[in-house]
Image (cartoon, rainbow, N blue to C red):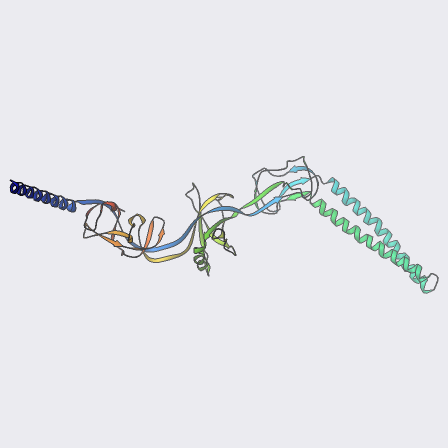
Length: 364
């Protein structure tokens, strides 16, 4: 009875093993649907991608340099203004009166100077004949010198009054765009007050300020040698990029952040960029010629490092380790492991083993 049971158990175990082998064979022969792409060889630009902010190339806070009442504002808020364009007029009458008074003082003191100089000449002749003492002559000469100094002071006062009068016409020192008006017409302003009348930003051309990690600094310096470094800025939510060039590299790395500040200049003639705006910055610091590139999603990471599945002989796959140099957009540059023209799996890797067979679902 025991022998019969043992024989029956062996028969059942053999049947189970045969069934498992057949199932495993069926699974091995089953083809896994995958998406594939062909490795390409091409010249690839090497970019540094960061986020930057738009800054006006020049900013001027317009302040009054003469006190008085604003009689006229010559622009509207948000207007574009050009260099030398009239912005404000301050009541010139008090300053015109001050200039007229300084001119009258000059005329009076010039008359006194002429009289003092004539007396000095007369006393010069008299002292030679001993009709007057040298002491008296000295006083007359000193009086003439004093009158001459008074006239010089009057002329300086006239020039100062003319400058003050010129300050009653406030003109734009740059080409730019006006902001909000801080002081409206009819108000009294004081010279050099803390609050500006208006702020003008130059936005064509314009700067984009950004920072790059210290590890990329040598690449930036290498790109600068004898060449213009192109920079592209794309406002967030706007697919249209603006083209510029690297214009400034700071003289020190910030030890707190490990980055160095840079600025790129953009013509901005179409006003794509606006001060204060955040933009995506792409700075091209070189190119990799004849590089082998594959989609980034083809690269997997395992315990032994990065690898890809390469399709061979139509349906077989090979698990192959790769050395990735750099990711550029949605592609990676492969230094080792894949040759141009080979087909790599980009989707479906989770079901693959080195002995799997595949069927191509789509091809990128």
